[in-house]
Length: 179
Image 1 (cartoon, rainbow, N blue to C red):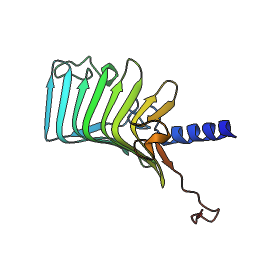
Image 2 (cartoon, helix red, strand yellow):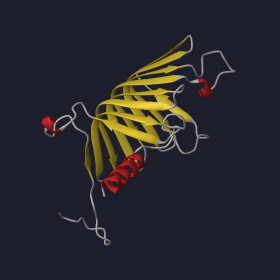
Image 3 (cartoon, rainbow, N blue to C red):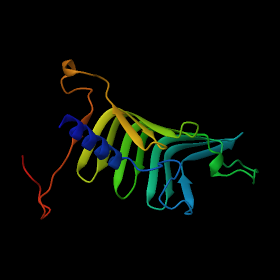
Image 4 (cartoon, rainbow, N blue to C red):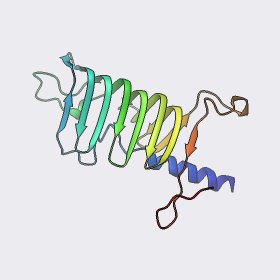
């Protein structure tokens, strides 16, 4: 029973995290990517966007106070492309939003070398009415494996600092089940 519950929770957690979040910004990579910010600076292979950063591709959206993109398209370098991006750092009020789900946190980092993204600080994953909260989310894009970590481990913590999952059940008719 314990293993079944762990497997169910693991599967549930994976369903919250979008596949290939930063590597494939949206489900259709052929769509153009649009970015807006109060200030955009491109210099020596690094692009910095700051002030109400809003990056969109199709129905997928990333919001942050500031974003640094390492590699990728450089001014005057026609041979570079988004496949050259090695790292993306989004700091302050990080949001990753799709029509199906939302990931929030203080910061988000994508590393191409390990094909992972990490969201830190007050992490909230929403899918429908289901919620997972913790301090850190690490998602391995190759393994399609997610890990949510709290700031405190064990029963001595009570409920503070631990990973929490809220699952809303519904009847076949769509009404909520009260337990």
